[in-house]
Amino acid sequence: MKWNAFLLVKESFSKTKELILPFDFMKWLKIGFIGIMSNFKVGGGGGSGNGSGYSSSRGSQTTGRFLQDVNIPSPLGYLIAGGIVVFALLYLLFSYLRGVFTFIYLNTLEKKDTAIVNNFKRFNQLGISFFKFKMIFDVIMLLIFAVVISPLLYIVITNWSTLFSNYKELFTPMNIVILVICIFLLIIVAIIRGIFWSLVMNFSVVHMYYKKTIFSNSFFLTFGKMKKQLVEIIVFILARIVFSICAGILIFLAVVLLLIPFGLVILLFILPGIFYTPLLPLGIAVGVVLFICFIICCIALNTPFLSFMTYHSILSYKEFIK
Image (tube, rainbow, N blue to C red; front, side, top):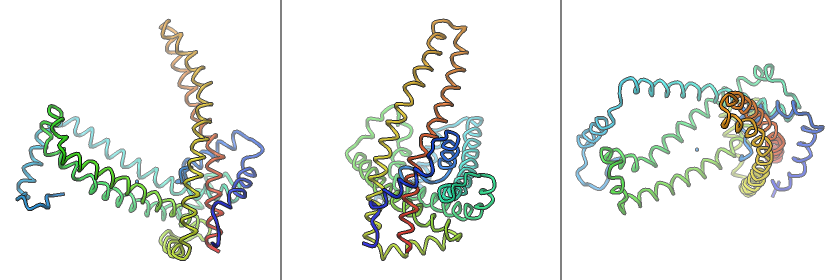
């Protein structure tokens, strides 16, 4: 092998220490915020074909009955539609921001530069290029998800009028088989999506940062090069799985240890309010403040783990691209 991802642990750990030590809470918090806002994570998305005479008119009748049975009141319908629009707009906004912050985070680790405003302008074009791909990728994954669960959706729609009153009748042997197959396919899709996205983030995106090139150029170059390093890539994927599990366990234990004192203090302020009502607003207010402090501490706590994983990505890329 030309390179081994497991052998990059020591250097990744050394670079992480250089970044986070000596301990500075505000520095940890700022790096942690940039990391969380990025796309980097410690962890690394019918009809009948049996000739039974099902026609488009029958499908239309089924859909019509479904819409009649749902019978959503107009105000509630407008509220739901408005909520979907707002959610979609927020999703687009945060996807764009995370695209830019992905490169800001790489620059933070590589240059020890935690400036946000200046680097946001600097990496805006790279972020937009990555954002466009992310949107296309998400739409494709959504379509695949819809195709996989379409048999379940058809069963629900055709039995909507009796779905809640006679739900036990839905669990026929055929429907159970369909459910199992759909779950199995969803797991397969999730695994393939996870591996693909890991390779995109750890190689194509890192290549974009270093070469200052658009996503399409970076994607075809890095994935084309992977064909010549299949063994190294497989070892890299295994290494990331092992490191993600270990980091996940450590983060869980750290959050639990952090939660104990915060939880005790919150209860200390809220419990008196339960027995003496005038104190309840004060207890809730203090509890909210402490909860926000807990979230801030969790963001800072995530810094060394995410930094280690991203440094490992950077070092793996440098070995990969040689």
